[in-house]
Image (tube, rainbow, N blue to C red):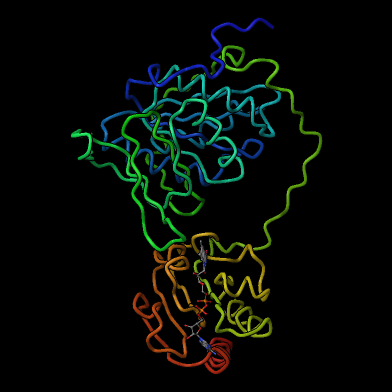
Amino acid sequence: MKCTNIHRYTNTQELLKNMNNVFVYCEIENTTVAEVSQELLTKGRSLANELGVQLHAVVAGTGIKGHVEAQILPYGVDKLFVFDAEGLFPYTSAPHTDILVNLFTQEKPQICLMGATVIGRDLGPRVSSSLTSGLTADCTQLEIGDYDDKKAGKHYDQLLYQIRPAFGGNIVATIVNPDHRPQMATVRSGVMQKKVLDENYKGETVYPNLAQYVQPESFVVKVLDRHVEEAKHNLKGSPIVVAGGYGVGSKEGFDLLFKLAKELHGEVGASRAAVDAGWVDHDRQIGQTGVTVHPKVYIACGISGQIQHIAGMQDSGIIISINTNPDAPINKIADYVIVGSVEEVVPKLIKYYKNK
Ligand code: FAD
């Protein structure tokens, strides 16, 4: 195949100078668009509104035409680029990197968002280093704001504030990228809230010719087999979370929390200290290096409330803390505090809800 127009990552920032739209890279599993991508489309729409530009999205897969459009456009996407060809699913690094590098060179977006997933963590750095644009990983907030570079005596309008915990979570850093485009950020699943803008949103869909974006040799890696683990629980989507910390004291202590969660039709979460102690599986860890949850009710049992834990649950509706220490930091953000031990309080709650 003869490939013309393909840029092999030789583009400099000169080519990206114009500041256009906001782009979201949409991840897929077969023909299903990932939730994290829909969360980022919602965020991308509000950023685009603030900037007065369009929201664009890109998705690449195999046999996706006709399946993905309705999962993406209603989030307020003005233009959707669908790359549909053999070899684009399952994801491999080189073809997807080629697509984004060449598409961004052509479209010159000012912002690109993608999930801080296994794919996003592979793809984002490849694209940003190819375009020498920089990237902030695992952002917890994204905002638009101005920036004064006092040293250089320069003022910048409407940059992307890429906000994330830094230095072990002890400070919250706001990172800006004044001179390079696109401003790239990854965000973990569950951090942003997804919301359909309009089921009938009229966005344009284009199906570019893959040969103009990807070199044949980029398909050098072939996925021969995949093993996909079924999710064991629905912690992220559960309206009630019973979370345990180091104060739970043992694996048996967690059995109590599972019993309470069962009575409440909720799920069990944990702090990192409880996970590190081996009392509960890592996929139940809530916080900066675990999952982010937004339940209606969050019951924190024996959790002190360090900043890294709070980062993953602070947007819960009602927070109830059960802790022997009345001055535990989590009590400051809790709506209700029960001062007492997990062993004493949780069995009473189980008994109460059993009899309801
Ligand atoms: P502790 O801080 O030890 O608190 C135990 C609490 O239980 C205390 O408040 C105590 O008063 C109470 N207690 C004791 N006995 C009882 C009892 N019998 N009944 C009731 N209460 C009792 N942590 C996370 O949770 N999630 C993360 O994603 C995360 N990421 C991190 C990332 C980095 C880079 C770093 C440096 C740390 C991270 N941490 C994370 C760890 C975090 O800093 C804390 O160490 C951890 O959250 C503490 O867990 P804990 O509250 O269960 O334990």
